[in-house]
Length: 434
Image 1 (tube, rainbow, N blue to C red):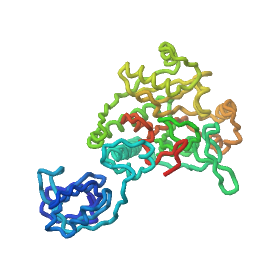
Image 2 (cartoon, helix red, strand yellow):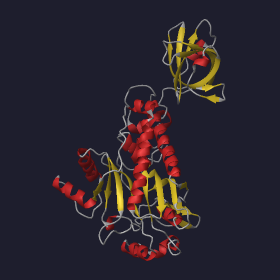
Image 3 (spheres, rainbow, N blue to C red):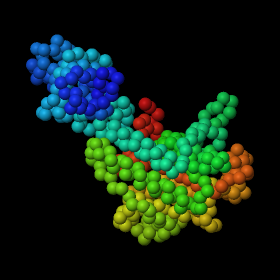
Image 4 (cartoon, rainbow, N blue to C red):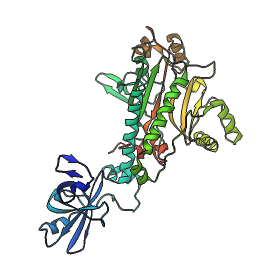
């Protein structure tokens, strides 16, 4: 709660007992018993009871008639009371109505009545008042904070790359085209090309909390058209294993920190199991054979879809693993910048968690001639990538990296059914508002 207007805390402490405090928040509920009323005040830290007496408070009738979700500021005396939810109540001396809510509410905040998911997203500003929904985003904040802290300790620096670009980063046509003055431009699919260019600068370990814009016309519970990721690139590596080690350490650290979010996990009814490292490595070719043995029609050379990913998750669960790497994908199903391992395989990897890909990465090609060959093999024109290729002509060390999807990570970590739960205002095939 807001105390004295300048201090922010919901926690009333023992030393506040008997003192005047000022609190502010939303009216969650009012129970009017005639001569006495109980107002439950809520902010992002929790709730607090305000007790009003009809005979003592001239503002009694005005307050008890307030619609739920109105906003008030209250100055009064803090009083210990073992019978109320957090051990203290406020006896008001002054109440200021800051905003009166309209009725009826588009959806309830504490009501247990079910509501359609689209209704929740259409009224996200109210949906986010629910403690269990806020818990997801408090955990998301911890995830990002942990990633920044861990990566900086490992010698990485944070960078920010352009989101308006002249060409695609991975080939293909899944780009959002925009008008850039008198030219055509696109929203960035990922910071991939810029991360690699930075490996030629001496800034040999970089990361970005990145935005992805991908104009793919899917509409599933696992996909968004605007998403975020922890994007990492590192130079002077021996091979992709160096990159995978950083990724598994990062993920383990995130799981450890989230496990400490006891209040939020309790609201969500979740328990976190910290994964052991190293995560098991499973080769693509071996998994294709395992899937075939389970009666699935899988063609070597194709990327795994959601159905195959779920089955792989079951295979790994039977082995006692929630987290696992899939390695040595066929070269032709990976982007042009992926380092070949031989004529058919690549030095690439995906990180799976409970049957869902949450990260993808590889050792990258650092030889400009091989890079041009791979561009051509993928049907791309090297001339369209000249700014990118220039960075490889004047000294480029071996390097690699990954993108760890923040929404996918949260979805797997918290066992959420829909990726739209994990981003404040989702953008998908049909949703552009709010």
